[in-house]
Amino acid sequence: MYSTEENKLEEILKLAADEPAHRPEFCKVLLNSTVYVITPDNQMGETEDAIISAGSKIEIEYWQKPDGTQIIPFFSSLQLLQNSIEQELSYIKLPAKSLFEITLGTTLFLNPNSDYGKEFVPGEVETLLSVGLSQIPTQRITEENTEVLLGQPSEYPSKMIDSLTQLFVKHKNIKHAFLAIMHDTSIDEKPHLLVGIEADGDLESVLKEAGVVAADTAPNGESVDLCCVTGSDTISKYMINETKPFYERKWGSKIRTSVSGNA
Image (tube, rainbow, N blue to C red):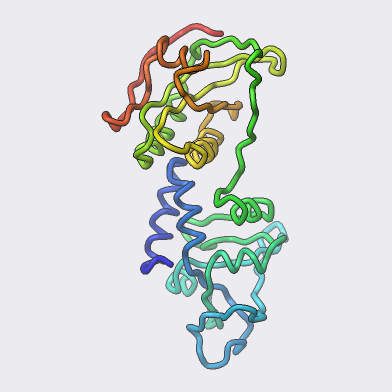
């Protein structure tokens, strides 16, 4: 557990609300934090600041949203819990991961009635518990003999590139990142943005996090493909030889270029 979980969780929640690059880290911090939930009066006896033990059965208070939907409110700190209620209520604190596990199938809301909050629908909670992220990018394997068209986007996706760059700075193993568009005419009606990542070591976690950030920042919600740049395949050679990286590890910053032309 984080020793200052409340402060850390609230800090990263604020950052993630404004900048998608911080959302993968928010998920990690949340799953390693202790949170507070409201319970029926005197459920835990006289010890208001109790931490439940494994196998304990607890009752948790539900709140109702204006549209009638029921949610379970939970809070990153006792102060935010107290600020959200108008009367004295009982509460317990427990690991956020345990809360998600025992309330599967229910919608939860972190820090309701606060400046920064986050709703978690059941499917999102299941994904958090299974992969540690709020969504799972779809993996697609392109066969070697598939013919694709490669080029550059006519409109530069500045917001997506900026957010991806902020994410890549957090991963010291990333060497370069490139941008292109790819059109696989056998399965797609139009080109997709393509982000190529060259890195040392395993890229699996980076690709998942980048997929989440790209999905949240792509222009008009369009699809974005991600790939590993190894230097040996056709796409890698195009990235390395025909484009300039928008991110390079030694720079720690992005390069924006004005490009035109379609695949």
